[in-house]
Length: 197
Image 1: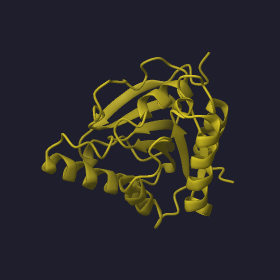
Image 2: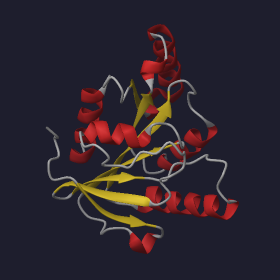
Image 3: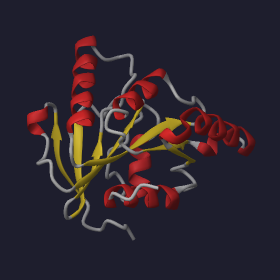
Image 4: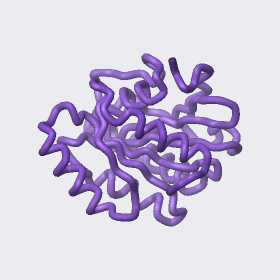
């Protein structure tokens, strides 16, 4: 049973004017293409194909707004770092992401999705820099934890936690075996409620 039985897609935006009204509270999910972002969203919301998954990286090309319940939204941001995208498109995504993160008043938190096997990329670090002026709370999901031995995954968790220090909370996560799902749901609810530890 989903925690969000009435969750539904609202709209996709390719420019700021298409964003839904800036009221209530929303939490955004961002990450490199192929980091497992859509799978993570689906497992956390407990709805199959809620955010559409694809074997082709870079399929989320718009900012997708979903209602979780009254005045609470989840926002799926375009995957970044995918090579097979025209420079002009990549620049447009960059401007759109920047405008969204810097100016959105209802944005209460960001989930940064990182493949545990790759660790933080320069793209991830750049995105984190965008959140600094507003001190936007960030929670990092190190996805695909099932693909590594427990010790390797724990080492990556330690290294990313050290690098980010007080800037973000970090956890291991696997959409496949549901490792860390409850912890991620708790973080989502805290962000939506504006409760940041």
